[in-house]
Length: 525
Image (cartoon, rainbow, N blue to C red):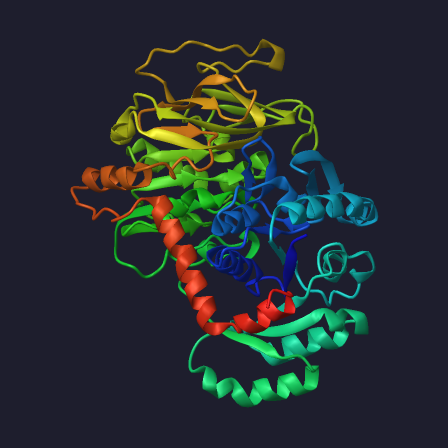
């Protein structure tokens, strides 16, 4: 059976996911077959495995860092918030319905056998399991039914590293307070403390560290610096969603609408990695400005986020930009918004609707929400595109679909009944297929057109569409050419760039963590 190490934090955003990814990389580099594990993840960024199942993207990233294939056993429970007090519950890759926080709290104890089975399957196939906790283990109102922090550590009999975030301040109080609130048997599981995200000279922390070790009776296993590595973060607290897109020089300006229920904004990571490209997230019309491209990303609540955008005046600003031939690109929920109407007769996203809601009208599409979720990995190529991004035509596409709507060409008509929706044929110059794709999971036969393009408006369901070889760089080059500029291309493809970031993270952790101590607490030394 595999040896395990668990990373817990004093709070959400303490850096657990990044530490876990870095340790996955280190153990893999040191010759151990390594897998990540998180029993329960709450996130709107998700990933579709090779067999068409849904899991948290953070564990997919950690699996990539470990050099292994993502598997739903690595994240058996995924909660995707639908409201402030409720979530869609996904078990081993399949949605089982929506639950309020109270309903899920009463239900989750039943999931312990499933969690154990998933963990044990991984432990039988790998040498090392890097387990990530959630939130804080000192949430004493929840500890009785814990399945993700100390409850998981006990299930796996795993030593724990407890990380505190010094960048937010009060790290000694964070660590000492967390340890103090734990029960004696839980304290025994913490074998090392980590001061994370430190900026400056670590020598000035030495008096505080000595006092912390004495108070807690637990050694500090490392002071980890604030590292500038470009690795996807958990979505709820991501710094990517704040500010004006960083401080690097830029030629191409991309504006992403920051929906209240934004999901899978990691679709934009390949663009963010490009030199000369600024990606900024916008939630107010006065911040939209004059971008070179407007992106409408995925969202867990398409209709309510469309109405939010409309009520704030963002939709009107985007329509004016589209009229001036500024390209608009929608993905998943953003793609659905580009159409003429959206209808939720069964109440998939909320209360059942008696009639459709008007979309933005930029593509001749109708979307009807259905209870069955589409989960698929796809690959293929862009079609013959129109508009300023026609230079993407023919480039390879790969990614995945996660959606609960059926979108068809409506031809400008507004059908009154979902049963009467048909596929209207339009002339190529009016609307063109964005891509031709086929599903890649075993046993699948579905293939054909996916997404639509009309002029400078582009939309599709495919997450990760910009990740393919040369796609992000070519898109940026075309936008630069449109404004008479030249963009310096990346020296490496996006996959090589990602792998280099994992190596940088591992190098930084090797310098700042006491790996001999960590290996010893795992029983590997």
